[in-house]
Each structure stands twice: as structure tokens, then as C-alpha cells.
Length: 451
Image (cartoon, rainbow, N blue to C red):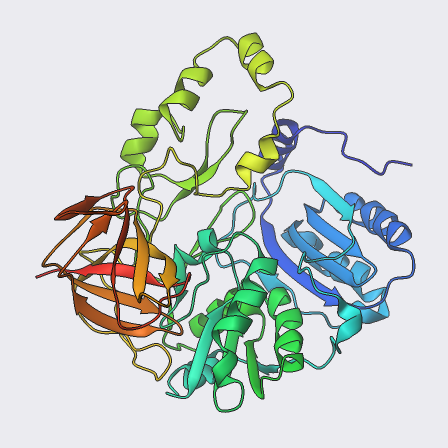
């Protein structure tokens, strides 16, 4: 019995084109208790393979997490394969905003320890005691409440191309990293703040909301169905979008346009851009943001080193990448040392369209450019250390130091030290220190105020 793919991605793409039928990209998840995930996996593969369903699916003892491409004329048959299991009766399917017949070209169903790598010990808290689910308009209403803290539980490469206005966006590469960081930052706000959270399709918040309620947060809310369902509702009900930019997705498309705002920049030249790509070097495949001009000049590569490798004979390329842990490099999404502009967000010439002010995260409506991040604070001497990652910083500059706990603090640089020596100007790559009357944290960023 066939329980694996027999066609390559290229062969599958050709068959899809020849068939000329519309396909739907969708996602769904369900928590339950599966006694035999392997048996469940095999049953799904047989049923879905017969329907020409494709996608990336994870199953575990705790349930299923799926992103898929389904022939539109087989959608009801596909629903029936889900309804065959009690825990998936009436399950919501998050249908993509933008459709691409080639979003998935293989059917991959993997058995994992968890359907989302959260790093949590589920035995220590009640995973069913979740936050309140909110629909799009309800979510917008709570965003307007000055007593609300909104947190993006996605990774940095997702939030840098699009996020909700005023959201805390942790600089993390995995979901499991964000949980302890956010918990530490919000320790003082458990009792009197609304903790509002969101992610792509809702699955990460299902677990995160229960975790934060266990940690003592009293008012926990989550966006039902995530950004995907939010987008469907705002379009159907003509609701104002509080989400700005693109929604990163984990298929061939790498993103869905929600609003026309571009809040990110090309990682190679700094030009406003929010198009992700994978490096063309098969030994790299680094995920990063690249504009059309750089894509043309660099031939879809993240560095001159990778560009040179792609020009070598195929046999030589194979020899060079033999034994390399490619996955580890791919996992550093957008963080390669070869990339110059690695901190996207508020661009100098395009601040976020709407500025909100809350007790925890006041935003000052000034033109500013992101130049670095906090690395350390020496409590006894009241000295802060920052890494300059973009542009330069000079004595006399006015800066804004911003973070979810620090808030927004504006100061003027009167004295500057680089690598322990006094100087007038620091440039990209320098570690700088100067005296600050308040503590900074690792999540804080430093902006130069323009004009």
C-alpha cells in the first residue's frame, strides 16, 4: 500500500498545470488525545492521497496541525475525511486570502512529539483553560482599550513584514523562545492589563493563552483563527484592518498581502521591501528579504560567496555541501552575517500609519530610524550597552530607546564610548556604552530621531 510520494515536485507541478483545476490553500489544527499517531497518520495519507490533497502536516499524541492544498472540487470530500473523526467534526478551515495552485507540491505527514514545538511541560498546567476567543471586530475593539497589551507570538521573520499596530514583537526565531521572554517582560501587569495575543492561524495562541493563565495573568484573550481568519472577516464585513503589511505563510507563497503598507526592508540594500526568498545556493537556502534589484544582481543569492558557488559545476557544488548541516543555517532566518539590513520595521521614510499610546508601550509620533539594540545594563554604574546595527550614532544626537517594559525614553547623547574608548561617532558593528538613568533590557531598541 502506497504511503509515500511517488512524484517529484516538478512532476506534480506539471500535472497540476495540465489538469487546469482550481486548488485551495488552507490550514487547520485540532488538539485531542491520539493513542496511536502512526496509525492516524497512515489513515490520513491513504484518504488524502486519493483526493490529490497535498501539504505539510504534523500529528502527535496531542492532535494535528496542517497546512494544505486541496482541489476545489474535492473540498466536500476532504471535509468528510475530517468528519470521520469526532474531534474534527465541524472544524474550521482557514482558507488562504491569496490562492496559488503550487503552494504545496507534496503530501508530507510527519509524526512528531508535539504539533507545535513549544518547549512546555503540559503536565504542569491545564491546557484546556484557554483565553477568550475574539472575532475580528471584538479584537479591534480591545486593541483600542488603553488597558490592553497586544503580543505577537510569531517569530521575527514573520512579524517584520506585518503585524498589528502597537504589538510587542519579540526578536525570536522560535515560538518556544517567546514564552519566557514575554512572561518576564510582563510580570508587573498580570492583574490589571488585558493580555491580547495573536499568531498566524491560532494554534500557537491556543497553548500560549493557557500557559499565561497558569502564570497568573487574569485577563487573557486571543484572536480566533489567527491573522488568516481575521483577514477573511474584515474583508467580508468591511471592517478596518488593524493589521499592517503582509502575513507570512509557510508555503511556496511565503506571504499574503493584507494592506499596502511595506514596513520591512531589503536585507541587502535597505530599500523598502517585504518579499521573502530562499538563497539559490543549495548548501544555504537561507530565508531572507530581497528586492527585485538585488534579486537580479545577486541572482537570488544571499551573499557573494553563495553567488560564486552557484556558478560552479553541479558536481563541485555537491562536493562542497557534502556533510554540511544545511538546516542549521536555514534556521537563522534573516540573521546571516552576510546581510547588512537585518532589522526591519519602522523605516525612516515610512513610520507606522497609526500611533497608539498605552501605559505599557507609549509610542512617540516622531520620525526615527532604527540603529541598534540593547545588549546589557550595568546597574551599579548605570551604564547601558548597545550594538549599532545600522547607520551611525554621534555625540549630540537625540535618540529614542523603546521596549515593551522600558516604554519610550527620549534622551540626547552627551558622551559616547566605543569598545571602552571615548569617541564622537560610532558606526555599524560598534558596541557603544553611555550613561542612562534608567534600566534597559535585551528587548529594547534604539532609534535615532530625525530632524
